[in-house]
Length: 286
Image (cartoon, rainbow, N blue to C red; front, side, top):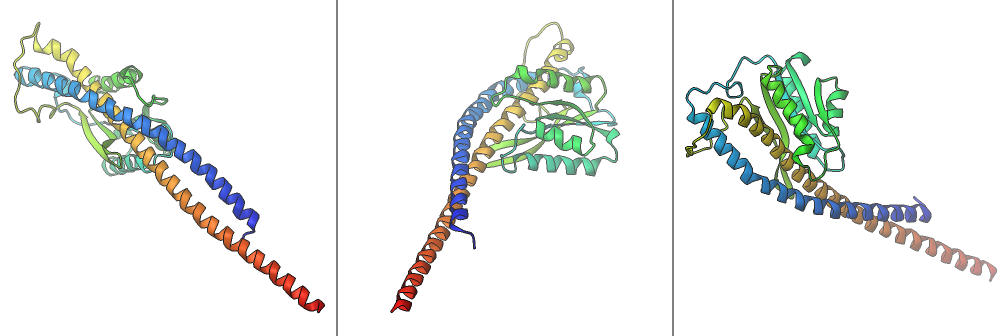
C-alpha cells in the first residue's frame, strides 16, 4: 500500500494538472468561438463565388478549361489538414487513419500519389511512414488568414494545372458541433460537379469572354475551397481540444476524489494503529 506521503504527492500533482487542463479548456473555448464565427462568415463568400463560377462555366457551351475536364488518372493528390499540436482527442488520428487506409486501398506505390500536408502532425505522420509528401506548411495561426496559405494553395492548384496531378482530394475534419466533428473527403479537382447543387443559374454579362474569365476565376475558386476547408477544420480543432481538456479536467477531479478517499483511509488506519499500540503498551505496564 502506498504511503501517506506518496498519496499526498499524487493528489498535489493531479491538482496542478487539473489546473493546467482547465486553463487550456478556457483558452480553447475562446478560440473555438472565434473559429466558428470565421467559418460561418466565409460561407456567404463561398456560396457566391460558387454561384458565379457555375453560372459562367455551365453557361458557356464551348468551355473546355482543363480544371473542368476529367482526364486519365496517373497520379492522385491528397491534401490533408491537421493541427501542429496534439492534446485534441481523436481530431488528428481520425483524419489520418481514414486517409492512410484510403491510400493503401487505392494505390500500390508512392509513384501513384502525392500528399500535401497542412499541419505538423499530418506531415510527420506520413513522412515517418516513407510516404510521398511533396508540399507541407506548419505554423498556421489559430485564426488563419488566406495570405498564410496562399502559396501552398496556389502551388497545389498549379500542380493540377500543369499536369503533375490528375485529380486532387482534400481530407479534413468538418465541424458539426462543439462535441461532434466528421472526417470529410471532398474531390477538389477537377471541378466536374461544383455546380450540381445549383438549382438556378444567374445570367451574367461579362467581357472579354468566358475562357479568359474562367482562367482567372477557377484557380481562385479552388483556392477558396482549400481556405474554407481550413477554417472549418480549425473550428473542429478548437472544439475537439476544448472537449478533450474538459474530459481531462473531469478525470483529474475523479482521481483526486479517489486519492483523497485512499489518503483518509490510510490516515485513519495509521491513527488506529497508533492508538492500538498505546493502549497495548499501557496494558503491558499494569
